[in-house]
Every structure is written in C-alpha cells, then in structure tokens.
Length: 450
Image (tube, rainbow, N blue to C red; front, side, top):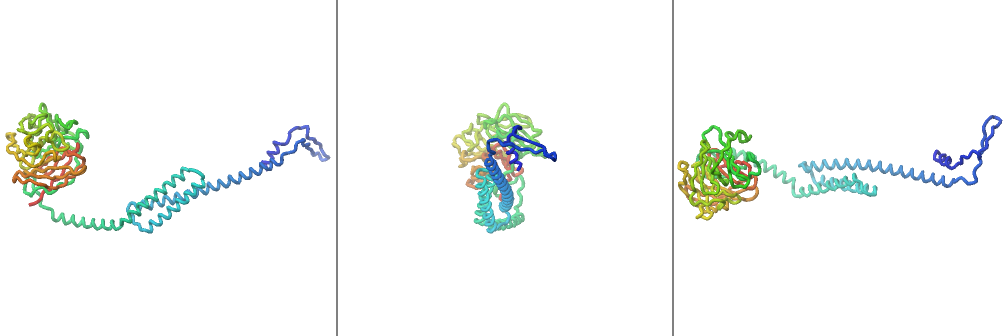
C-alpha cells in the first residue's frame, strides 16, 4: 500500500487552483478535487506492482537456495573431514578390511555427485566448491592406492613382519650367547678381517665442507692417557697441505677447541696419504718423490727419497688425486703403499724402519693401484677398497706380506658420501679412521676368531 501511495503522490498534481473547499454546518472542511484533463496511468501502476511482487518472490527463493546450499556444503565438509580421518588411520597402519574400502568408495561417490550438483546449481565456478571437489578427488586417489596395496597382501605382509621380528629377536639373543672372544688391542691373534661395522659420523672437519680432501686419525703409539687426534684437510685444490691440527682430547676434537697448529714449512705436503705415528707426521713432499716426517715435539722435518716411486698423481687411487704415497700403520709398525714407475701402476708395499727412516723391505702385488679407491694394513695384510655405488664400497683384494698369499675378498663397507679420501687403521682401538668428502668417520673392525 505504501508503494501505491508513493506512486499516487508523484502523479497527482499539486496546483492549488484545482482544489475547491467549504465548511459544512458541523464545521468540517469539505474539499473536492478537480482532475486534470489527462487520465491517471492506472495500468502502469499495476504493472510496476506486479514486477515488484515477482522480484520479491524470486529474491526470497534465491535466498532460500543459498541457505540450503550453505547447509549442504557444511554437511559435505563434515563428511569429508570424517573420511580424511578414516583414510589417515588406514594409511598409518590401522586395521581395515575389504568392506572398509567399499564403504569409503560409496561415500566418496556420493560426495562427488552432490558437489557436482552444487557446481551446476551455481551456474559457474565457485572457489569453495572447486576446492571441496579437488579434495574429494584426492581422497578417492588415496583410497584407490591403499586398496591396491591391500591387494598385494599388506595385511599378510604385516603378519610376516611380526614373525620376522620375533625371529630376529631370537637370533639376537642367540648371537649374544655366542659372542666370540674379543681380540686384545695390538694383537694379531685372529684369522684376519671378518667384517666392518656401519659408519659413525664424528664431525665435519674444522675448515668446513669445501675441504673435501685430507685425512684424520689418532696416534696409535701414543703413551698419553688421552688419545691425540690429528686432522689434516688439504687446500681446496685437493693437492697441497700447509699445516694440520692436533687435539689433545676427544672433547677438544668435538668442540674444535684448544687445537695445536703444526706447520709443514718449508717442506709442504701433497695428497691425502698422511698418517701420525709415534709423534711423527708422515707425508709426501709437494712436487717430489720425497717421504717427509715432522716431529711434533721439536718441529723438525726429515726427508728421505722413495727410490723409483711414481709421484705427482701418476698412479693415485681412483677418484682421489695425488695420493701416490699412502702411509699406513698396523700392529707391526709403519708402511708405505705406492707404485714404482717400473711397475706401471701395480702396488708395492714398503715396510719402513722408523729408526733409520728407510724402506727396509718391499713386496710387489698384482693390485693395479688406480683400480682401488684406497687401502689399509692390518697385521701385515694389505686390504684394498673399490667403489660399489654412492653409498657403499667393497674390500675386494688382500695381500699377506707374511705368507705372500694374495687373492680376492668381499666385505661391504658403507659410506656417508661418495669418496673416501683417506683410510687409516688404528691397532690401538681396532678402528678405521676415514676422511669422507670432508667428514670424519670411524668404523669398528671385526676379526675372525681362531
């Protein structure tokens, strides 16, 4: 009614000359209106009223639809959250059956159908509906993958794993009851190398990740109560070494504190074949075939030529440059592993007399040095290593200087990074000290009991 009055007010004339009025006997004002000549547009008013009513009905209908869509969307969102929890429980190992998969797939199909209807009803894209539809599709794929795994007897495999765990536990108990007698440090009362433990990462070298070449270890002949550790990274050219560090305790090593820096001036070294033995640091002098040793107490350097030895990366290990001379220590003393020029790459093992600093005896092997990544000595036996893949190596060759026996072996050696730049055996703790692309690694050595 208010709408009609407003329209009438706009179309009625306001000219006072067309209105006549008088007062009757009761004092009431009586007015009469004279209409203009033009006729009032009643049809237009009725048409406008009809349009208004139609629009009102349509607006109310659309509001009802939106409210219904909102309720439907809330219900579907709750269902999706419930499905998500159920699928996550199945993915993390919760129990489930074939019926669980069928129920999940049925509910997902219903969700996809209802969400599709919502998209059609809204006549276009809606970000909330699109996101809901995408999440339901992802859920469907996850359930399909789980069902595929189940067809491969996942439940049966779990039961098998439980059985294997029990067998492993029984095996561990049996193994502990038959642990072989431990070998005394420094003793060769065993039948050679049996196995190598998994690697233990001690730390990154003190100069950082870019210093990938070098060596480290302890002095097996040290008489101090605390082990003395040496760390010798090469320069970033993977060749030259100017100095190295000594740490006088394991705590100092781990905390990089209280180091003593030992300079090799004026006879700088090259390659990663260095070792510390009985207060002397042994290395190959830069650009020569000289063996050098630095006395860490007096800071004096002695030199001795290694007659006929190849040098300057002529016959180094594969993947490791300038390690033409590789010094090694075992229970019987100090060794040098190298290739004479006359041997054109085949390894010779020299036993060094530490008193005179000379090679007192040499053994020639059938091992081609560039075929190995590194080597070490245990109880007079040479063990050579070769790469298998990025995460493992194999101890594949041995030569016994006591008997002349030479042949193949196969012992797996895990590694942290790709290259083993330096491998040193320490008879005082039966460990391998390995420099692995800048990281200091140790392994426990396991021997065959007699």
